[in-house]
Image 1: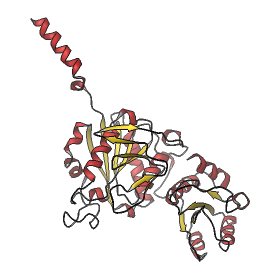
Image 2: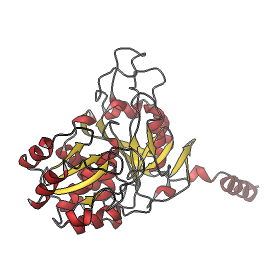
Image 3: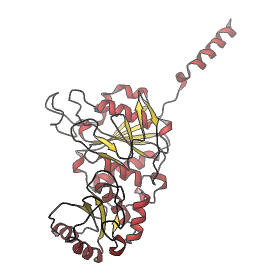
Image 4: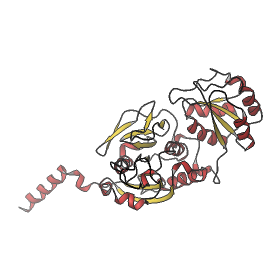
Length: 352
């Protein structure tokens, strides 16, 4: 009889493998944003104060995440993301880098305001060397709103960070159950929950706590990056600024940014990163003074072709390829920590 009971117990154990499943350890790094915001009433989904709810309250509001992983929280910042400067960006990157180096941490989730979420995610993909999943998540509605999207987004982000299949795939943005690559995701609407898209499509989707994958990232990221947060000193990056292209422009903004210390200027041009003929002399003069000129586009899809619209080789300008102006700004700043050579910077824009 004793042998029969033992055999039955073993058989049940084989049928229920999850009874002995060792959960991964995920750390949630809270930085503020809408996901930690509060409105005056449950009907305030667009009018609210960001960065009010502390990390422990965020986690306690979604107790189901503890079924996915052993989840702990760290309050790195408490700020609305439009107010993030280089100092805060570097703080986040250093905290994430510190965490992924710990052998008992399997994945990291960063809760973040959506306004600059895509920039922070891209910066992490360029500067943190790891193959552990890093997931940046936010919400379009505060926790106090009817149908708040933050709790499910957080649940899904933890599920993704805890998934073994997410290892080595880079930094993700998880919003509305879509899994996006940090490099090419953008916020495209400010009032709906399906706010984030990529012109190249999502990497995958997450359903009931399980990721399903459809593509990988073709560019360099994380372990393959030549940039490393550990090599960046201080609380500031080289100054890079963006000038938005339009009709009837004045050259004053470019000149003012250069005088203020900008080492590169991102021209967010019309169409194919076009530059008005009356602006070209100013940009050439600045380039000759050592300011890098980088042509991006205000158009949300497509990419800027080199030597189309303008003779970039002749002028010594750089094109941002398919990076939007705000991500081009980050890559340019990191590039300037290594070189002032326009050809070398152009190589980086092709590769990242």
